[in-house]
Length: 560
Image (cartoon, rainbow, N blue to C red; front, side):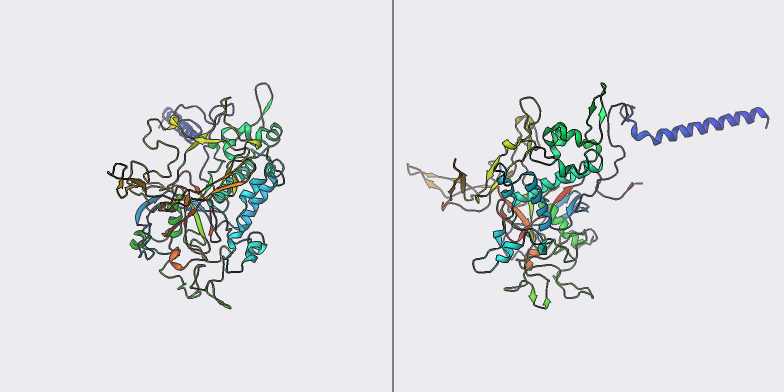
């Protein structure tokens, strides 16, 4: 081969290598180049900012991952109570996260401590905030039983610190979840450098409270819009064109801000309680799994623990824990969380210990004919209130709204620093096909378009003619309670004999058996209801969180 051909070959190889390197460089940086426009994403000089390196949602404190899927929701065993409220139906649940244990006394006391520091109860303006968050410790009292020790000690004594909190209403549980969301996101923003380290200890007050929704929608109004707090609490200052220091805020596009803690839906709770991650047999898939553990009995069949009870529940009449010195379940009232083995998802006490609030409004029928995906009854859609200046309206300390509950307890509907919420209106519902009103709690259940109205016996008119009358199926008592200008409670107790039900839009589902229940109620399919503003000594709760992104946590899962 002559020198000319050798030279041409070398040039060809060099060009090939250059093209290959160019291709590799272009491929490696393509995630920061827009496929829509070709412009550079995350350009230091400005432009569109987006977290192109986001890999997966971080598991928030206290939670475990639950991979979603399909399952048979409802009870397939004999309904000996004749409730007929849990007919089997096939549902699909999206992946989500759930608390490893029930919310404990110590976790709830941290919440109460924060409220006491930020909204001092000795301040008349804030006294009702703290009182409205306190659990009802009198739920332990029994007319024919001695229980003052639990009334005085169960919530606050360190001996019960890791026991599930009780005496908490559904409303209080929701407020705890909202508080938890703000505190966790505050921590994430501190870790990412958007907020000053430990700013929650120095800057938190009624006038400068951090709220996640406010931070996202009106970041300059965070911490009450206090400029000194905002400037002192931000570790990523930039300068504008004139050299003035400006603040930088994290948006949803950064991936730093976590979804909200909330109560699980009934479908999520039941799916998680069954713990089917390792079980794929036909009977399990079709709903034959009776408990969170494997098998059809409440005692362990393993050699090392054979005969031990697998949950904390009432063994029989007058038997809440077994014989002294040889206890069946190790507890007489509630038990310390994690006292029993977890289910296959790693969740503790999904049967026994305490029953748990879920998000759903109770109805005897799960309307799977309308929806079989992420089923939930209780949607009340709201939107941010807009002030006269065109910006979102932030609640100030003198604008707190209090609700008087049916039992006379007063709770704060909103807190300073939050964005005021109002019902959605025609601007959001006009010509929509997926929803047309703000309050959807009784959708297809009590309105004119459903069959939940029934024809009563014929009544006689003044002329003696037979006239049919129509009544609501869920005709619950309508008690009313108000406070007059002097703060005195005015109670109006509904004594009507025409009431036919205790079901209304303010009763919520609770799931699982408790220390007070027989093993019949340990079945995750069982469902009961209780007023959302009342509490008991056997209902607690745990939080959940939605998952963003992929259904599974498996990395690089591709199809050939």
